[in-house]
Amino acid sequence: MDFHGKIALVTGAARGIGLATAAALGRRGASLIITDVDETRLEQAAQLLSDQGVAVLAVKADVRFFDDCRVAVEKTLKRFGRLDILVNNAGISMVSRFDQCAPGPCQRLIEVNLVGSVNMTLSAVAEIKKVSGSIVFVSSVSGIRAIPEGSLYSASKAALRSLADALRLELASAGVHVGCICPGFTSSDPEKTVMRGDGSPRPIARPPHDTPDRVAAAIVKMIERRRREMVLTPVGKLTAILQRLSPALLERLLRGRTLQN
Image (cartoon, rainbow, N blue to C red; front, side, top):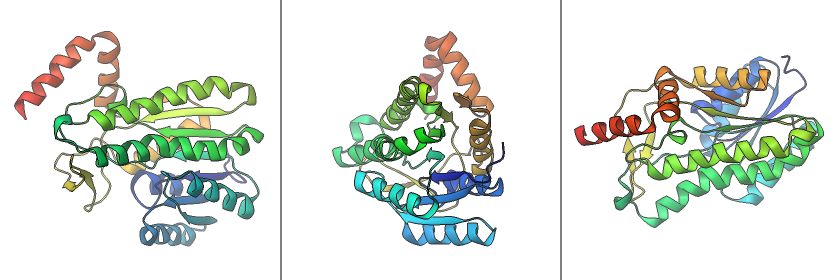
């Protein structure tokens, strides 16, 4: 697929999967709108993409707020005149037992991971319908099978899969492609953290299953081939198979891992 002339909006694009996806689309010829709440990193990402010869517009936006999403789409149309691709990538993680979570951090996680994707998709869907474009949701293997100490994160990612399934049916008559990608735990940078249940940052202590570049390549492939869902990494694919064929066995394996920890 030739992405020249295509306009792509990627959320959470200041680093990690979002930045890698923006760069991958840019290398294939797409013009980009990148959003994030971290304005400093966002400007650095925009400069990096611009130095690679990509037409890019950086818009600071907090996806929890519909007005921020609406303004991002309005600026997209003002600059480029259309919108072909939306990649809902913005998200945060929480690692904590449920009974040790505070309400505030729980609400923030749901607002970013689920409500944020809803807000941006609501803002963009009318334009994407005009061009029979693509909407991609970045879910997780945890959205296929919830994991211990990841209850709310898993719930938010599972909700994205359900949202994608419904929109795929609703938007089929307009020729819109709706995809949902499920990466495993992905490395990003040494500063990456997740939230504890009280909202404080928790350093990453486990090895990654994948890299942002490989996830980005899969997202580009998903858009190119208009795939409905992709599960990444051998661990992720095995999880999906076990969840479908023997959820009780998978639950015993996860329970055993919890007891070891």
